[in-house]
Length: 387
Image 1 (tube, rainbow, N blue to C red):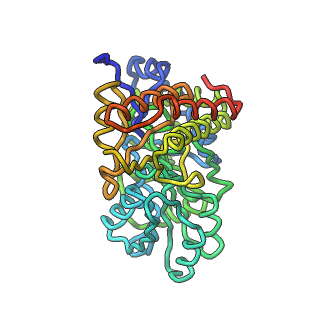
Image 2 (image 1 turned 90 degrees about the horizontal axis):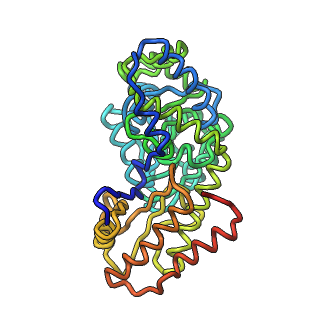
Image 3 (image 1 turned 180 degrees about the vertical axis):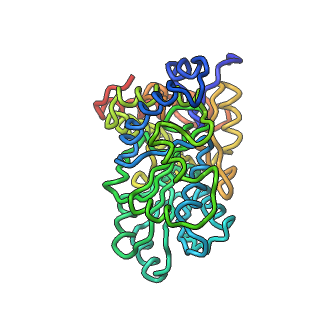
C-alpha cells in the first residue's frame, strides 16, 4: 500500500474532484467585495436547481448538523409539538436538537434498516392533531435507508398543516430531489457528501408556507437566523464571514453537476448502488436494507459469519480503503460503503475486487471474482456508460 494513497469509501466526507481542489486553491478575496458578490450570484440559481425549488437556498458556514438546528430553531415556536421520525442515528439527532430547545417531541421509531411507512405517519398525525412539524431524514446515513419523502410529504399534507422538514444531508445532489413539487417545507443538506466538497457548508431552503412561520416565530436566534441570511442573500452576500475557499469549490462542483446533467447524476448513483448490492448478494453476504428501501448513496452490509470491524481493519491495512462502521446499536454489526459524489462505476468495480481479497484475508470462503462479476453484469445490463 502506498503511504499517501487513501481511498475514501465512507458516506462522507467524500472524495473531492481535482478541478474542485484547484478551485479552492484560488487566492483569498475579501468577503465583502464585488468578487464575492459575483460568486454568490452565480451560485444561487445552480443551488436552486439541485434542490428542485424556486426558493432561495441559504448558504450557512457550518456542518450539516448546523443546518438541522437551523431548521428547528427557525420553524418551530416555543411550546409547539413536533414529530420526529427515527430510522437511524440521524433521526435521533433531530430528537436531540428538539429536546435541547425544550420542544415537546413525539418520536416515531422505525426499525433500523427499514424505511418509514407514510401510512403510519398519517395515522400518528390523526391521533395527535396538535403537531406543528414533522422532521425526517431523506437518506438515513447510519443505515443506508432512503425514506420515501415524496410520499411522506403527501401523507402529511392529507391530514395536517404540519410543516414537512427534511434532512437531505447524505443524498441531495445524488438522488432525485423536487422540493417544491413534493411539498417539502424545509430541506437541508451539507457540502461534504454528494456536493463533493470538504465539510464546512450547510444549505437550507424553505417554502413560502415555512417562511410565513419563520417570520412570525418568536424563538430567539442569531447566527442561524434564516431571515438574516435570506435578506443578505438577496444582495448576494452573507450576514457573517463565509467559508470562501469552499464557495470557490462549490461553484466548480455545481458546474460539474450541471455538465453531467442532474438526471445523469441520479442514474450514476443508482447504477453504483445496484452494482454494490449485486456483488454482496452474489457473495451471499446479507445487506441491511431491502432493495426498495436502499439508498443510492450508501450501502450497509450486515455480515453473519465474519467480524465487520476486523474486515474494515484489513481493508484499511491492505489497500488504504476506508469504509464506515455501524453507529450506536449497529456498532460492530455492519459496515457501510459510500458511493456518492465523485465516484463512478469504475470505483465500485475497484472496491468490490479489493473487498473479495479482504474477505479471503479474514478467512471468509468465497469464490474470487463472483462479486466483481455480478457488478460487471449489472453495469453491462444497465447499458449506462460511466467513466
